[in-house]
Image 1 (cartoon, rainbow, N blue to C red):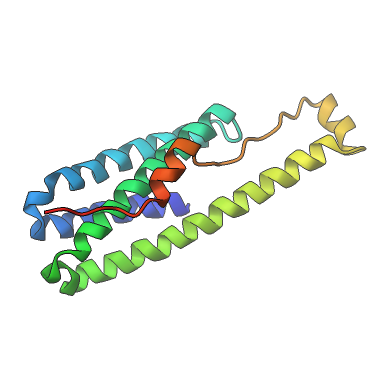
Image 2 (image 1 turned 180 degrees about the vertical axis):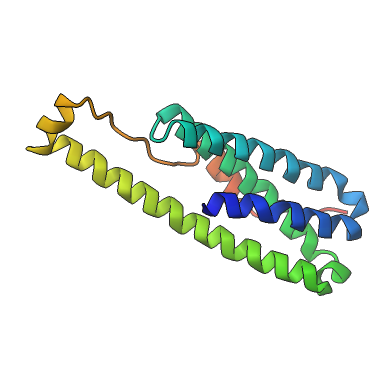
Length: 158
């Protein structure tokens, strides 16, 4: 749900920024492309919850989206007119709030998966899990190669 909220906010943020940042087209297009890829990853995860491949795809696309959103917000900081625009300020605040919610939801999901996997392996639950072929669920993680990119501060050059 939090990821869907994030995806719904991004087009509004991009449209508001487009009016002010015409020459930053590459950054805006990267945000739109990353959003589309992340939505595809979310759809795959919804279709196959707990599937390691689907969760890996979701984690990778979310990591990519995190990186380009960071770049967009850093570019937005460089434009005084854009920073003063009420719509942009409100959307940036909403996006920041949503990012916090996404992080909390990701942690809650991973905690639930860890609890499920632990219960699945402990006696007497392991007997029931074995009889009904309960498979282990996969955590939602950002791949290591994307994690460094997400944590790195975006660089803005003119």
